[in-house]
Length: 316
Image (cartoon, rainbow, N blue to C red; front, side, top):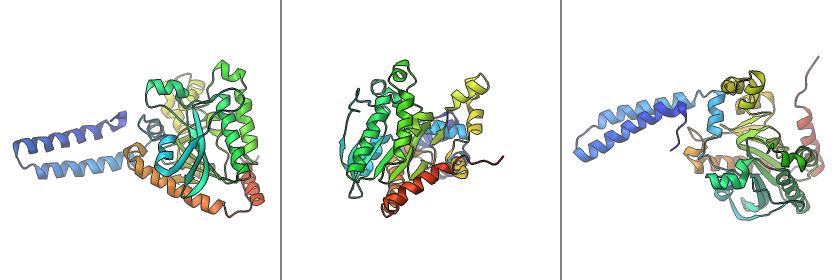
């Protein structure tokens, strides 16, 4: 398993325990008490490490290559998924996937950023960095959901929208701005969940909803820590300091009123137990959708508008 730098002491202790167990099995020597002591030490080390994560360490977990992606959650939580393609203008951007599915026995429209598991797939999906056609596809699916009265679920996991010249030529900024404007008025419940990285406009292009939730080790930020460090200190190595300054963790964002709820993860991150992570996410989705579908549409839109208008209020 891929280990992050701060996890190396845990990995070393796990390796020692496995070596002792293997030695005991092969030599038929009883080392049960030594193994038990090490396992207790390991449990404490895990609790201390993962219970006191810095903002930068959470960013690293959010980027873990084994972390569940949008398609993983769809497969774990939903049935009868039918992927829908294209923006009807230019192309099908595979950095954003979406379609109709059944969740908890009810039809929904689900969409989200999708990264790849290897180099070939990452190139095809552009590392989860969407082009304008990706955001236009997402909006097309949301309007379809409105037409058929289907709740919308968006799963965010992107370092940011694709910043290339070709994306700008096709109206990247306008595509994201249009999504923000239109999502405010989509007259069906919308639940937004940041499952990994929530970077810049690439994230908020799918981020307007009645409920906005973050997985415990996900982050949501106006810019990546490296980008912020490059601007403020002219040194991307200052990313850990930038992470603290940006207030991008789930706890920070909940305190600031930017998100509505934190979804707990298995100890060490969602990649440690994807099924448990999916169950926690599914429980949150069900509870919020059950609540939102009872609200009349006019009231739903009013509450959504007020929710975002309250953000960033200040006094002179």
